[in-house]
Image 1: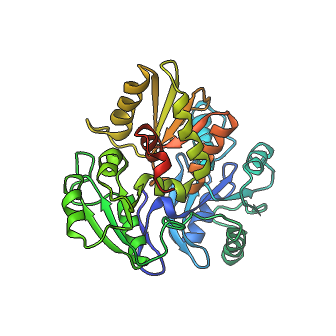
Image 2: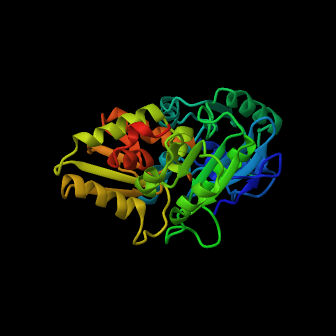
Image 3: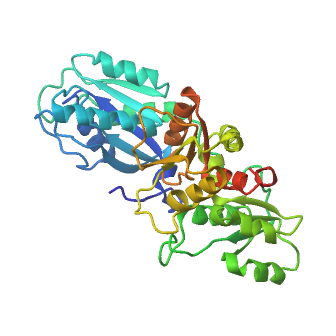
Length: 377
Protein backbone atom coordinates (compact mmCIF):
# COMPACT_ATOMS: atom_id res chain seq x y z
CA UNK A 1 0.00 0.00 0.00
CA UNK A 2 1.30 3.42 -0.92
CA UNK A 3 1.95 5.64 2.10
CA UNK A 4 1.40 9.36 2.39
CA UNK A 5 4.45 11.64 2.25
CA UNK A 6 4.98 15.17 3.49
CA UNK A 7 5.74 18.13 1.27
CA UNK A 8 8.37 20.75 2.08
CA UNK A 9 5.91 22.41 4.51
CA UNK A 10 5.25 19.20 6.39
CA UNK A 11 1.78 18.74 4.86
CA UNK A 12 0.54 15.33 3.74
CA UNK A 13 0.29 15.05 -0.04
CA UNK A 14 -2.49 12.73 -1.28
CA UNK A 15 -1.64 10.18 -3.96
CA UNK A 16 -3.81 11.94 -6.53
CA UNK A 17 -1.87 15.20 -6.14
CA UNK A 18 1.62 13.83 -6.73
CA UNK A 19 3.60 13.76 -9.97
CA UNK A 20 3.76 10.14 -11.11
CA UNK A 21 7.01 8.99 -12.73
CA UNK A 22 6.85 5.60 -14.47
CA UNK A 23 10.03 3.60 -15.08
CA UNK A 24 9.87 1.24 -18.07
CA UNK A 25 12.17 -1.14 -19.89
CA UNK A 26 12.87 -4.77 -20.71
CA UNK A 27 13.49 -7.32 -17.97
CA UNK A 28 16.78 -6.73 -16.14
CA UNK A 29 17.27 -3.32 -17.76
CA UNK A 30 17.88 -1.80 -14.32
CA UNK A 31 14.46 -0.35 -13.46
CA UNK A 32 14.41 -1.52 -9.85
CA UNK A 33 18.05 -0.51 -9.40
CA UNK A 34 17.17 3.01 -10.53
CA UNK A 35 14.24 3.24 -8.10
CA UNK A 36 16.47 2.14 -5.23
CA UNK A 37 19.15 4.63 -6.27
CA UNK A 38 16.74 7.57 -6.43
CA UNK A 39 14.95 6.76 -3.16
CA UNK A 40 18.09 5.75 -1.29
CA UNK A 41 16.20 2.68 -0.03
CA UNK A 42 15.75 -0.97 -0.97
CA UNK A 43 12.31 -0.16 -2.36
CA UNK A 44 12.31 -2.77 -5.14
CA UNK A 45 13.80 -6.26 -5.13
CA UNK A 46 16.86 -6.42 -7.39
CA UNK A 47 18.02 -9.71 -8.90
CA UNK A 48 19.68 -11.06 -12.04
CA UNK A 49 16.68 -13.38 -12.42
CA UNK A 50 14.31 -12.14 -15.13
CA UNK A 51 10.84 -11.09 -14.05
CA UNK A 52 11.67 -10.24 -10.42
CA UNK A 53 9.27 -7.28 -10.51
CA UNK A 54 5.73 -8.55 -11.11
CA UNK A 55 3.09 -5.99 -10.13
CA UNK A 56 4.01 -2.28 -10.31
CA UNK A 57 5.79 -1.02 -7.19
CA UNK A 58 4.85 2.50 -6.02
CA UNK A 59 7.26 4.59 -3.96
CA UNK A 60 6.46 8.16 -2.88
CA UNK A 61 9.34 10.60 -2.51
CA UNK A 62 10.02 14.32 -2.50
CA UNK A 63 12.25 15.57 -5.32
CA UNK A 64 13.72 19.01 -4.74
CA UNK A 65 12.61 21.37 -7.48
CA UNK A 66 9.70 19.11 -8.47
CA UNK A 67 7.79 18.43 -5.27
CA UNK A 68 5.86 15.38 -4.13
CA UNK A 69 6.25 12.51 -6.59
CA UNK A 70 5.54 8.80 -6.89
CA UNK A 71 8.06 6.53 -8.60
CA UNK A 72 6.50 3.49 -10.29
CA UNK A 73 8.71 0.44 -10.92
CA UNK A 74 7.08 -1.69 -13.64
CA UNK A 75 7.48 -5.26 -14.83
CA UNK A 76 9.76 -5.98 -17.79
CA UNK A 77 8.13 -5.37 -21.15
CA UNK A 78 9.45 -8.45 -22.93
CA UNK A 79 8.06 -11.38 -20.95
CA UNK A 80 5.57 -13.12 -23.24
CA UNK A 81 4.80 -16.15 -21.15
CA UNK A 82 1.14 -16.51 -20.10
CA UNK A 83 1.90 -14.80 -16.78
CA UNK A 84 4.27 -12.35 -18.42
CA UNK A 85 1.57 -11.09 -20.79
CA UNK A 86 -0.60 -10.25 -17.79
CA UNK A 87 2.31 -8.33 -16.29
CA UNK A 88 2.73 -6.39 -19.52
CA UNK A 89 -0.97 -5.49 -19.44
CA UNK A 90 -0.54 -4.16 -15.90
CA UNK A 91 2.44 -2.14 -17.10
CA UNK A 92 0.34 -0.62 -19.90
CA UNK A 93 -2.26 0.48 -17.35
CA UNK A 94 0.43 2.34 -15.42
CA UNK A 95 0.96 4.56 -18.47
CA UNK A 96 -2.46 6.11 -17.88
CA UNK A 97 -1.44 7.69 -14.57
CA UNK A 98 2.12 8.71 -15.45
CA UNK A 99 3.09 12.34 -15.81
CA UNK A 100 6.71 11.56 -16.74
CA UNK A 101 8.06 8.44 -18.47
CA UNK A 102 11.55 7.02 -18.01
CA UNK A 103 12.75 4.41 -20.51
CA UNK A 104 15.84 2.37 -19.63
CA UNK A 105 17.75 0.66 -22.42
CA UNK A 106 20.35 -2.01 -21.76
CA UNK A 107 22.30 -3.26 -24.78
CA UNK A 108 19.25 -3.66 -27.02
CA UNK A 109 16.39 -1.30 -27.87
CA UNK A 110 12.88 -2.53 -27.07
CA UNK A 111 11.30 -1.02 -30.18
CA UNK A 112 7.74 -2.03 -29.29
CA UNK A 113 7.90 -0.44 -25.85
CA UNK A 114 9.68 2.68 -27.08
CA UNK A 115 7.02 3.27 -29.74
CA UNK A 116 4.27 2.90 -27.14
CA UNK A 117 5.96 5.39 -24.84
CA UNK A 118 6.45 7.91 -27.65
CA UNK A 119 2.79 7.58 -28.68
CA UNK A 120 1.63 8.60 -25.19
CA UNK A 121 2.93 12.13 -25.85
CA UNK A 122 4.16 12.71 -22.32
CA UNK A 123 7.63 13.89 -21.25
CA UNK A 124 10.02 11.00 -21.96
CA UNK A 125 13.50 10.51 -20.49
CA UNK A 126 15.69 7.88 -22.18
CA UNK A 127 18.56 6.37 -20.17
CA UNK A 128 21.23 4.07 -21.58
CA UNK A 129 22.33 1.45 -19.06
CA UNK A 130 24.28 -0.66 -21.58
CA UNK A 131 27.42 -2.35 -20.35
CA UNK A 132 26.23 -2.86 -16.77
CA UNK A 133 26.27 -6.66 -16.94
CA UNK A 134 27.61 -7.29 -13.45
CA UNK A 135 24.96 -7.71 -10.75
CA UNK A 136 24.88 -4.65 -8.51
CA UNK A 137 26.75 -2.47 -11.03
CA UNK A 138 25.03 0.48 -12.65
CA UNK A 139 25.91 3.32 -14.96
CA UNK A 140 23.20 5.50 -13.45
CA UNK A 141 24.28 8.86 -12.06
CA UNK A 142 21.66 9.99 -9.54
CA UNK A 143 22.09 13.75 -9.84
CA UNK A 144 22.09 13.64 -13.65
CA UNK A 145 18.80 11.74 -13.68
CA UNK A 146 17.21 14.03 -11.09
CA UNK A 147 18.29 17.02 -13.19
CA UNK A 148 16.53 15.50 -16.22
CA UNK A 149 13.38 14.94 -14.17
CA UNK A 150 13.41 18.55 -13.00
CA UNK A 151 13.84 19.76 -16.57
CA UNK A 152 10.92 17.81 -18.07
CA UNK A 153 8.72 18.56 -15.04
CA UNK A 154 8.65 22.17 -16.24
CA UNK A 155 6.50 21.00 -19.18
CA UNK A 156 3.76 19.54 -17.00
CA UNK A 157 0.33 21.08 -16.73
CA UNK A 158 -0.55 20.71 -13.07
CA UNK A 159 -3.91 20.51 -11.42
CA UNK A 160 -5.98 23.66 -11.49
CA UNK A 161 -6.33 25.16 -7.99
CA UNK A 162 -9.67 24.05 -6.54
CA UNK A 163 -11.21 27.50 -6.24
CA UNK A 164 -9.45 29.35 -9.05
CA UNK A 165 -11.87 31.74 -10.73
CA UNK A 166 -14.65 31.07 -8.22
CA UNK A 167 -13.47 33.05 -5.19
CA UNK A 168 -10.93 35.81 -4.75
CA UNK A 169 -10.47 35.61 -0.99
CA UNK A 170 -12.20 36.77 2.19
CA UNK A 171 -15.66 35.44 1.27
CA UNK A 172 -18.06 33.60 3.54
CA UNK A 173 -18.62 29.99 2.48
CA UNK A 174 -20.94 27.29 3.81
CA UNK A 175 -20.02 23.63 3.27
CA UNK A 176 -22.86 21.09 3.30
CA UNK A 177 -21.49 17.67 4.21
CA UNK A 178 -23.97 14.83 4.81
CA UNK A 179 -22.69 12.31 7.34
CA UNK A 180 -24.53 9.25 6.03
CA UNK A 181 -23.47 5.63 5.64
CA UNK A 182 -20.92 6.62 3.00
CA UNK A 183 -19.12 9.06 5.29
CA UNK A 184 -16.01 7.50 6.90
CA UNK A 185 -16.33 7.12 10.66
CA UNK A 186 -14.52 9.85 12.59
CA UNK A 187 -13.12 11.74 9.60
CA UNK A 188 -13.99 13.70 6.47
CA UNK A 189 -13.50 12.58 2.88
CA UNK A 190 -10.53 13.95 0.92
CA UNK A 191 -12.40 16.50 -1.30
CA UNK A 192 -13.92 18.08 1.80
CA UNK A 193 -10.57 18.34 3.56
CA UNK A 194 -8.86 19.79 0.48
CA UNK A 195 -11.66 22.33 0.00
CA UNK A 196 -11.47 23.48 3.61
CA UNK A 197 -7.72 23.95 3.29
CA UNK A 198 -8.09 25.88 0.01
CA UNK A 199 -10.71 28.17 1.60
CA UNK A 200 -8.53 28.84 4.62
CA UNK A 201 -5.59 29.67 2.36
CA UNK A 202 -7.82 32.27 0.69
CA UNK A 203 -8.74 33.81 4.04
CA UNK A 204 -12.39 32.77 3.72
CA UNK A 205 -14.73 32.31 6.67
CA UNK A 206 -15.84 28.67 6.55
CA UNK A 207 -19.01 27.24 8.10
CA UNK A 208 -19.80 23.52 7.91
CA UNK A 209 -23.06 21.67 8.49
CA UNK A 210 -25.05 18.60 7.59
CA UNK A 211 -27.96 18.84 5.14
CA UNK A 212 -30.58 18.87 7.91
CA UNK A 213 -28.77 21.72 9.64
CA UNK A 214 -28.39 24.01 6.63
CA UNK A 215 -31.50 26.10 7.22
CA UNK A 216 -30.52 26.78 10.84
CA UNK A 217 -26.92 27.54 9.82
CA UNK A 218 -28.08 30.12 7.27
CA UNK A 219 -30.27 31.77 9.92
CA UNK A 220 -27.27 32.10 12.23
CA UNK A 221 -25.29 34.06 9.65
CA UNK A 222 -25.66 37.83 9.63
CA UNK A 223 -25.51 37.89 5.81
CA UNK A 224 -26.11 35.26 3.15
CA UNK A 225 -22.93 33.31 2.31
CA UNK A 226 -21.11 34.19 -0.89
CA UNK A 227 -21.00 30.53 -1.84
CA UNK A 228 -22.39 27.17 -0.78
CA UNK A 229 -20.37 24.06 -1.61
CA UNK A 230 -22.33 20.86 -1.18
CA UNK A 231 -22.07 17.13 -1.55
CA UNK A 232 -23.50 16.39 -5.01
CA UNK A 233 -26.04 13.86 -3.78
CA UNK A 234 -28.02 16.60 -1.97
CA UNK A 235 -27.78 19.21 -4.73
CA UNK A 236 -31.57 19.42 -5.07
CA UNK A 237 -32.32 19.87 -1.36
CA UNK A 238 -29.55 22.43 -0.87
CA UNK A 239 -30.49 24.44 -3.95
CA UNK A 240 -34.04 24.89 -2.63
CA UNK A 241 -32.67 26.44 0.59
CA UNK A 242 -29.98 28.53 -1.08
CA UNK A 243 -30.29 32.33 -0.61
CA UNK A 244 -30.90 34.06 -3.91
CA UNK A 245 -27.52 35.78 -4.10
CA UNK A 246 -25.43 32.85 -2.88
CA UNK A 247 -23.49 30.92 -5.52
CA UNK A 248 -23.54 27.13 -5.40
CA UNK A 249 -21.29 24.29 -6.54
CA UNK A 250 -20.26 20.84 -5.32
CA UNK A 251 -17.12 19.08 -4.13
CA UNK A 252 -17.33 16.77 -7.15
CA UNK A 253 -17.42 19.70 -9.55
CA UNK A 254 -14.39 21.25 -7.84
CA UNK A 255 -12.54 17.96 -8.42
CA UNK A 256 -13.63 17.97 -12.07
CA UNK A 257 -12.23 21.48 -12.54
CA UNK A 258 -8.94 20.56 -10.89
CA UNK A 259 -8.27 17.19 -12.48
CA UNK A 260 -10.06 17.16 -15.83
CA UNK A 261 -11.30 19.13 -18.81
CA UNK A 262 -14.27 20.95 -17.29
CA UNK A 263 -15.48 22.20 -20.68
CA UNK A 264 -15.68 18.64 -22.02
CA UNK A 265 -17.35 17.38 -18.84
CA UNK A 266 -20.04 20.09 -18.99
CA UNK A 267 -20.71 19.20 -22.63
CA UNK A 268 -21.09 15.60 -21.49
CA UNK A 269 -23.69 16.57 -18.91
CA UNK A 270 -25.75 18.21 -21.67
CA UNK A 271 -25.92 14.79 -23.36
CA UNK A 272 -28.24 13.62 -20.58
CA UNK A 273 -31.15 15.39 -22.29
CA UNK A 274 -30.74 13.04 -25.28
CA UNK A 275 -30.83 9.76 -23.36
CA UNK A 276 -33.68 7.25 -23.52
CA UNK A 277 -34.46 3.74 -22.27
CA UNK A 278 -32.21 2.24 -24.95
CA UNK A 279 -29.14 4.23 -23.89
CA UNK A 280 -26.03 2.55 -22.48
CA UNK A 281 -24.28 4.23 -19.55
CA UNK A 282 -20.93 3.52 -17.90
CA UNK A 283 -20.44 4.75 -14.35
CA UNK A 284 -16.72 4.83 -13.55
CA UNK A 285 -15.54 5.00 -9.94
CA UNK A 286 -11.97 5.69 -8.88
CA UNK A 287 -12.35 4.07 -5.45
CA UNK A 288 -12.71 0.35 -4.85
CA UNK A 289 -14.70 0.51 -1.60
CA UNK A 290 -17.59 -1.92 -1.19
CA UNK A 291 -20.78 -0.14 -2.35
CA UNK A 292 -23.29 0.64 0.41
CA UNK A 293 -27.08 0.94 0.24
CA UNK A 294 -26.81 4.73 -0.15
CA UNK A 295 -23.91 4.62 -2.64
CA UNK A 296 -24.09 7.62 -4.95
CA UNK A 297 -22.56 5.90 -8.00
CA UNK A 298 -24.04 2.42 -7.69
CA UNK A 299 -27.47 3.31 -6.32
CA UNK A 300 -28.49 6.98 -6.41
CA UNK A 301 -27.41 8.09 -9.90
CA UNK A 302 -28.76 4.93 -11.60
CA UNK A 303 -32.05 5.41 -9.73
CA UNK A 304 -32.33 9.01 -10.96
CA UNK A 305 -31.50 8.04 -14.56
CA UNK A 306 -33.98 5.14 -14.67
CA UNK A 307 -36.72 7.18 -13.01
CA UNK A 308 -36.44 9.69 -15.84
CA UNK A 309 -35.62 7.52 -18.85
CA UNK A 310 -36.66 3.96 -18.08
CA UNK A 311 -34.73 0.76 -17.42
CA UNK A 312 -31.61 1.59 -19.43
CA UNK A 313 -28.40 -0.46 -19.37
CA UNK A 314 -25.94 0.83 -16.76
CA UNK A 315 -22.51 -0.77 -16.38
CA UNK A 316 -19.87 -0.05 -13.74
CA UNK A 317 -16.08 0.05 -13.57
CA UNK A 318 -14.04 0.51 -10.41
CA UNK A 319 -10.48 1.49 -9.60
CA UNK A 320 -7.98 0.79 -12.38
CA UNK A 321 -10.46 -1.37 -14.31
CA UNK A 322 -11.78 0.49 -17.34
CA UNK A 323 -13.18 -1.09 -20.52
CA UNK A 324 -10.74 -1.38 -23.42
CA UNK A 325 -13.60 -1.11 -25.90
CA UNK A 326 -16.00 1.73 -25.21
CA UNK A 327 -19.53 1.31 -26.53
CA UNK A 328 -21.65 3.72 -24.54
CA UNK A 329 -23.79 6.80 -24.99
CA UNK A 330 -22.40 8.44 -21.85
CA UNK A 331 -19.66 7.87 -19.29
CA UNK A 332 -20.16 9.33 -15.81
CA UNK A 333 -17.00 9.53 -13.68
CA UNK A 334 -16.80 10.17 -9.96
CA UNK A 335 -14.87 13.15 -8.61
CA UNK A 336 -11.70 11.02 -8.95
CA UNK A 337 -10.07 12.46 -5.85
CA UNK A 338 -7.89 9.32 -5.62
CA UNK A 339 -6.69 9.61 -9.23
CA UNK A 340 -4.12 12.08 -10.48
CA UNK A 341 -4.84 14.46 -13.34
CA UNK A 342 -2.95 12.31 -15.85
CA UNK A 343 -5.27 9.31 -15.36
CA UNK A 344 -8.45 11.44 -15.40
CA UNK A 345 -7.37 13.17 -18.62
CA UNK A 346 -6.44 9.79 -20.12
CA UNK A 347 -9.99 8.55 -19.62
CA UNK A 348 -11.49 11.74 -20.99
CA UNK A 349 -9.29 11.44 -24.09
CA UNK A 350 -10.30 7.79 -24.54
CA UNK A 351 -13.95 8.84 -24.45
CA UNK A 352 -13.36 11.67 -26.93
CA UNK A 353 -11.49 9.33 -29.30
CA UNK A 354 -14.42 6.90 -29.15
CA UNK A 355 -16.82 9.85 -29.73
CA UNK A 356 -18.54 9.20 -26.39
CA UNK A 357 -19.75 11.99 -24.12
CA UNK A 358 -18.22 12.03 -20.65
CA UNK A 359 -19.17 13.90 -17.48
CA UNK A 360 -18.90 13.48 -13.70
CA UNK A 361 -21.17 12.88 -10.72
CA UNK A 362 -21.70 16.49 -9.68
CA UNK A 363 -22.39 17.78 -13.17
CA UNK A 364 -24.66 14.83 -13.99
CA UNK A 365 -26.74 15.27 -10.83
CA UNK A 366 -27.07 19.03 -11.32
CA UNK A 367 -28.31 18.35 -14.86
CA UNK A 368 -30.80 15.75 -13.68
CA UNK A 369 -32.03 18.21 -11.04
CA UNK A 370 -32.42 20.94 -13.68
CA UNK A 371 -29.87 23.32 -12.16
CA UNK A 372 -26.75 22.81 -14.30
CA UNK A 373 -27.04 26.35 -15.66
CA UNK A 374 -27.23 27.70 -12.11
CA UNK A 375 -24.17 26.04 -10.56
CA UNK A 376 -20.63 27.38 -10.63
CA UNK A 377 -17.99 25.51 -12.59
